[in-house]
Image (cartoon, rainbow, N blue to C red; front, side):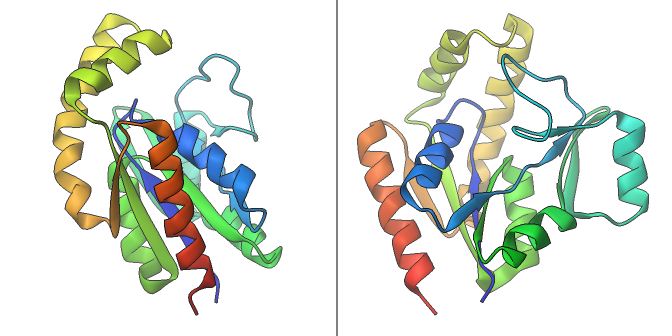
Length: 188
């Protein structure tokens, strides 16, 4: 059976770190590269971290029904998962792993149903989340404030995921993730 693993979390929860760890531990996983209209951050690279598209290019793909799911998170700031990306990974005999925002995670779980394991990564607290976003040093103060406000709302979606992992200690969170993934992959 074709399977997918969905990681979602408020920004700054450690989701990307846990996804990268999972990819290192499990060779049978392959990362689904999402599309976005936002600008690259830091050393992000097109077709490695994201497919960076203009808002018009993104809207064209919506019109072509090219997405499994997509969302306009802020005005002209789209994120989405291409059907072709999922098919390519499945055709290579791998399990798809997604790193998506919370609403995207809920949409993906609804779309894939029993083929999906959805994991919500929760920060230990909103205060810790804010501290992490500040220490990342990739966003200005206004963006951080917006992300923290959004995180408070996103936390209410945790119950819509199969599992919640609280990332207060990274090593403990990694162990929990490894166990969840191993059990899901081995299940028929």
